Length: 337
Image (cartoon, rainbow, N blue to C red; front, side, top):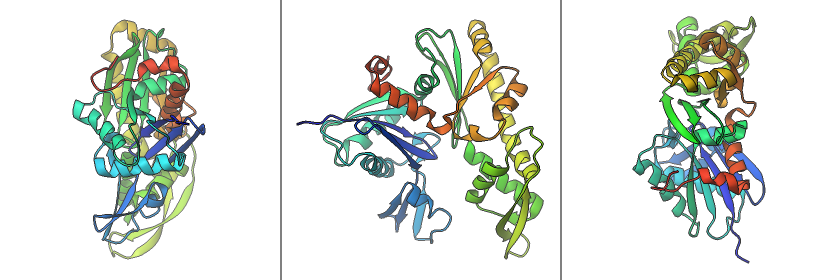
């Protein structure tokens, strides 16, 4: 029997998520790859992340996707095939692969998705692209054919996507070069400035998860180990929630300003619709407590926070694969609807 399987793939900057229609399961791992001496692949996904900021000089641990776009085709190809293999060992003949993709891509960037899919062990895969905001809209329950104007803000690892869906398509979309990694770097910089302590981005990421608040009066501290900027020796330090929140708020306030500016430039009838139903907020960085209330206060518009966070896009992609009526939003190169 010939088995035709279908996969949904969300190649994010921070994580790669794969949905397998055959098993009904979704896996998510860090979008990282560890390579020794520039040739030998040692680890992929979470295994590579465990080596991040710990590996010796001859082992490079990197992200093959930057700003939501494929940066290294060969590395992404390896990551893709490894992750699909982990989702289902038998891809079957001529599998269908649905990728969530940024809206404003060049034809060369689109072809990269085809290149990474047709290499490796797949036999005659059928490759489709779906605009990332459309995937988010499906997951959020937005009725795409009927909406008069829905704004979706996805705060990812390296960038924030702001999109408006109306007239059954994404009519406006822009990207802001601020994401979770920029928040991590801001925390590192603030710790260095206030505490004379150098910590890694992995440490900053953990501090962001447990100490960052926006507008909440929470006073907590955590002990961290880093390098003294004066002596160059390791030492421990104490980091407060006030420090972390100050660093985070500086970045989120920039996102809020860009959203408000974007909203002001949208047509009046769409702006009215957005004001009625609110801005939809998703992405891994939206796990920061009270981020929806903070943006609502700064922007002056209702904000609907998705409880799926970084899994929102892949959930929409999975729903599209299961429902053939929704597959009209999928397209191939040169045939976008």
